[in-house]
Each structure stands twice: as structure tokens, then as C-alpha cells.
Amino acid sequence: MTRVSTETTSIPVSSKTELIDEITTYTCLRNCMGNEGTAGSCCSIGDRDYIIGPVHDAAQVLERLSALRGREVPHDEVFIDYEEGSALFPERTFWQKKECFPAIRVNTEDETMPCIFLADDNLCSIHAIRSETCSNYSCDHLKSIFKAL
Ligand code: SF4
Image (cartoon, rainbow, N blue to C red; front, side):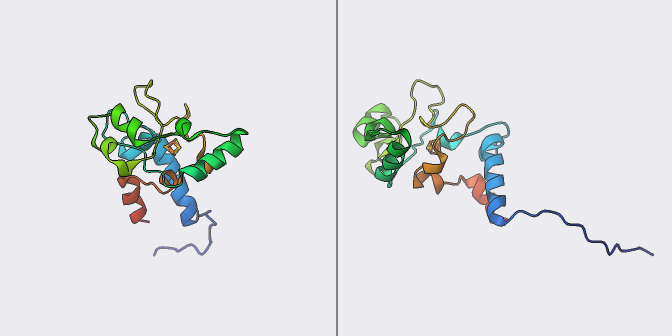
């Protein structure tokens, strides 16, 4: 006969929001888009036909960034508009679409072409004040995980 324990064990359980945050952090830093050992792909464009835009709340982002830095941060320091972007990447279709702008500026000196706010630890250096484009984004890999929760 099997004895069933009547003792209860208290296991801390994360709320769904906490769980989503934990999964996102783990995935973005260690298993980006389901590729083990990679990080921050959605914050870099590399050689893909990919753009981080459009940013509809660009003015609000600049306001928050200016307050944080204690100086007026100009639009061009943070964003790329159609004229510049379409000339920068003439072979990439998203960069030829006006509706994809303004886009977040990427560092073209770096081979991975990361967003200028992506820090060396692959975390967003302006996480708390990032744009809606960034805060609302989930890659297909994350979406498939969240669907199962
Ligand atoms: S602002 Fe932050 S979240 Fe958005 S692309 Fe850049 S590093 Fe990524």
C-alpha cells in the first residue's frame, strides 16, 4: 500500500508577470530566438534585412533621455530617418520603406551593428525609458513560449 504524505511543502511560485520577466531575461541573454549561447539579436541588425523601427514615441523617448542625461539629446543622435537609412542600406528592403522610420540608430562601426544603447553585457542601457517599439517587442520564439503559459 502506498502511503500518501499529508505534509504540505511551501514552494515559492512566481506570478505570471514575474515568470514572463524571468523567461525573457534568460532567453534574451542565453538562448536568443532559440539559439543557445546567443544574446540580444533583436537589438542588433547584423547582416539581416532587419530594422529597429518604426519608433512612434520618438519624441517621448528623447524627452526621457534628455532628462536622464541632463542635456537636450537631438533626434539624430538616437534615430535614423528615411533619407539617411535608405542610403545607408540600399540592399535591405525594410530600410527602403518610409513607414519603418524613424529607426533606432545602430553602430555601423561594429560588425554586429548593435543598437547604440546595447551595452557590452547585452542589456539595454536605457531599459527603463526605452521606446514602445522595444518594450512591446517579443520575437516569435518568446511568443511561442508565452503561448504555453
Ligand atoms: S533601445 Fe534597448 S531594447 Fe531597444 S533596441 Fe536598443 S538596446 Fe534593444
